[in-house]
Image (cartoon, rainbow, N blue to C red):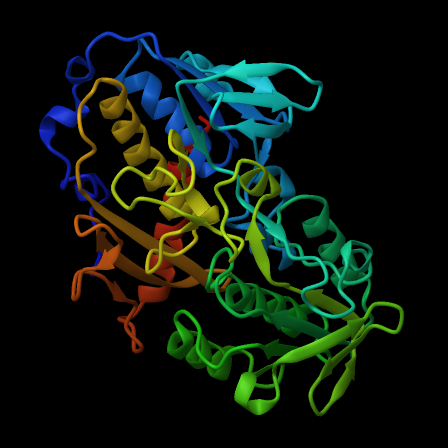
Length: 418
């Protein structure tokens, strides 16, 4: 089923989109994190309630997008296409503060920045993204990410892994590890594997890629397995948990990856480790013992700290996945709910959706989509409302989805940053 993006907010009452519905208030809303969720939330707030004082706090002058970064690793895209400045939010009247948020006092409604400055707010939206759980995999600490990059945050790690792949001699072994869920972008490791396999097949055909996976099932598995069998049968091998794919430890000095029964010495190792909500979420008191952030499904308000809303990858929002599409839509809806709450209007249930595109080759992609309701106090998938790419596509179907993926990327980056 192909989703109509214009229909994604159909579950909200029409009045929710009218600025007049929120009344006149000069309340302060702070947004921490300038990714697809935070930048979109800040822009949406200023557009639907221009009288609000909206501040976007982001440590970096530009955003490095994770979607499409696997194409960079496959040698199919330049890193410059992943870089986005914040001209759009500034043009909409959002105040930009380039600083790292170090602490949040939810009781006092203040944010402390790295330079010691403090900002006050009436409502806070946190879009903090993810951090790596250093040490959760034995042997994989922050120093290990240099010889064994994770590249799960776009930027220097992406460039490092790309250099390692380029430098590897033909006939080398690339080992990739995939963690248990939850983690950012569920199908991301398998898209990455596809594009690295394409690079090896075309540029270093004697080389191999081995995927060691901590689970037996993953997003779009039948579609990926079919693509690998057809396109990369002599290049790519996937081992799930039941086939001794679960990694027990790594040794970055010897480039060794160990499972329960076997050890592999890699020429290039891409270790995708367990993750959690970014550190500011913990310091703000909105992350629980799981490392992720429980929220009210309707308003996105933290269940641990009143007045603080959390969106994007950091949230506990299953079955809605941790994806850029999810973060972007959550940013829009959270902004509407925050504006309603500031105008003494109740948050209202709505529908949410997600579509994830994954490239399996330079001009071939597959997708999965879902639609979710939040009216019962939790996120719930609506049966039959989503879908996946057909296992046997129409002629040109995979190429059409690759074009749709590129259109989606252009649209979402424009909405957040352009």
